[in-house]
Image (tube, rainbow, N blue to C red; front, side):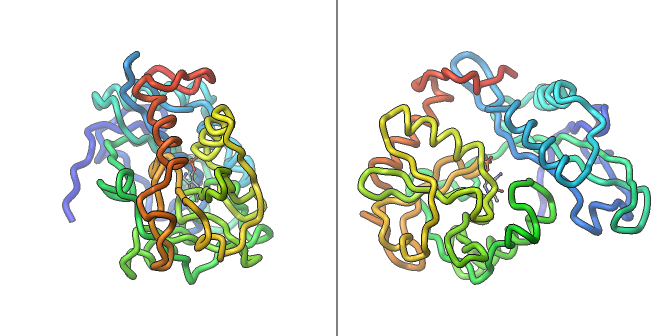
Amino acid sequence: MSQNYPEWIWQNGQIKPWREATVHVMAHALHYGSSVFEGIRSYETPDGAAIFRLTDHLKRLYLSAKIYDIEIPYSMDELAEACREVVKKNDFKAAYLRPVAFRGLGGFGLSAECPTDVAVATWPMGPYLGPEALENGIDACVSSWQRFAPNTIPAGAKAGGNYLSGQLIAREARRLGFGEGIALASTGLLSEGAGENLFLVFDGALHTTPASASILAGITRHTLMTLAREEGIDVIERDLPREYLYLADEILMCGTAAEVTPIRSVDGKKIGTGKGGPITRRLQELYFGLFNGKTADRWGWLEPL
Ligand code: PMP
């Protein structure tokens, strides 16, 4: 498949042409999944382009790195500047940003002390779950693949290796004709989507799975919890059994890439009216309102490009 790539990328302290940002085939991360990364979006706002919650995303990157003893040889300020620089150099305003830090070339064993390579890529990205997903919602299924147990791989780190699980879930869902897959945790209770957190609505309150359900506690999830509570909507973090998916009044998935996407059916069973309910629509309004100026950013989440 042909793909248009952006012109510029940041790698190890330098902006360089995209095609020159290469790594050795024996880089540790390629064999063992030893990378940590972030997915961030910048948006055009009435006050100029802004990177959404850049600092919070970079904090999570360093925490993910800490879990795996990956030393990032740049300060957070330096990486924040790299993010801004690469978006500007490509002349993007609304874009997706992908900082990644990984064990590079330096040894062959699992515990080899390899130098950390760092890159920041950026590219334009529309709605991740399809052009009509935000408006029409998507059909989801419960995956036959479970999420990894908490004492196997830490779901709270955004590490490359975790996305083997995500790939199995997402690819199975697409193969079966669904827009996205939802995984159960090793407990048998609900976890999250392949690359998104989940909210279910019951009687006007939002219910979302807790950190103990092998989820990545998303920054979009935190954003929606904050916006909802401001609106007087109750938000409850709790264990949720699978059948609650079929009983919910509304379900939405959220993430930096997926933004706020209504789920119109799960396993072929219609959710509510099948059109995205009032709470989902209100949360979409509030979330996208941060970028079109209708929701006041009282938290300093919009960090100027
Ligand atoms: N869960 C998983 C597994 C993810 O990959 C993502 C996307 N980073 C999320 C949840 C949502 O996280 P965020 O809102 O921080 O993008």
